[in-house]
Image (tube, rainbow, N blue to C red; front, side, top):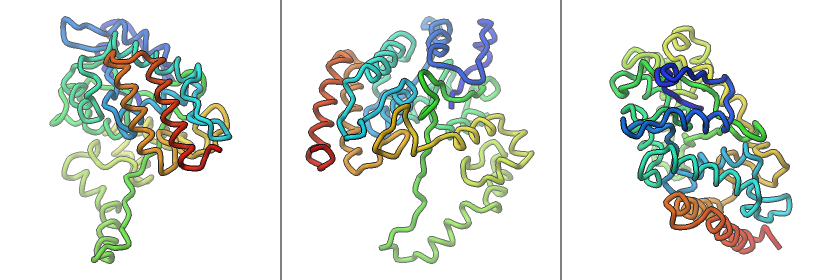
Length: 299
């Protein structure tokens, strides 16, 4: 989702559309950046890693019309769509993002936004609860929410992630672990969490009944945006073109952990100016092609 400072928007006479585009985001960021006051128009993940910068960038790439592979598993990282998306990201972050962005992941950006240093942040819906919590956020009464931006296609602009609450086969106390898992995702636990920290802080994405609860809807203005993001994310149709893989903010093959890290490092190098975007993507194309050949995907 997109999290943004409504007070800063109001001060500039800006209105966030229900479904913003990345063109909107660029215009807003340009107008909201005030480096003399230490406020940056936008903050996004820059820390390299398949689950760090690439998790956000995969959604950006998807909606810009890019894919990781064609239907024959040939990598497409040197395509015009990849170049357009990554150049947009690098240019936006250099102009309107915070310094040292290549060190920022989810937690660092959460801290920046909660501390009043950023006007917009696009990231996981799980960031909404802490931002709305007065004990954790200096902008709890100023934050608003919208759907993640889109560009050429809405496909893949939302992600869907599971923390894999599973019990390993080798677990010594699997019965107790199952009881715990059932309790930790139960209606009773959600109620307990609400009584302890307030409805806005209960674990999101755990139970549909939470989103049907009027108390939660009233306390958590991000609830409807979060629910829509989950319901519209489609890992089986992540791109504008047909692809041979499943996954929105990742490619569901074992090699992706290594591939995503390598590509994330190259893009972080482009963000810091150590490589151009073209150099970063050509190096990535070569590395990914080698990996899928070794894995037997590409003949």
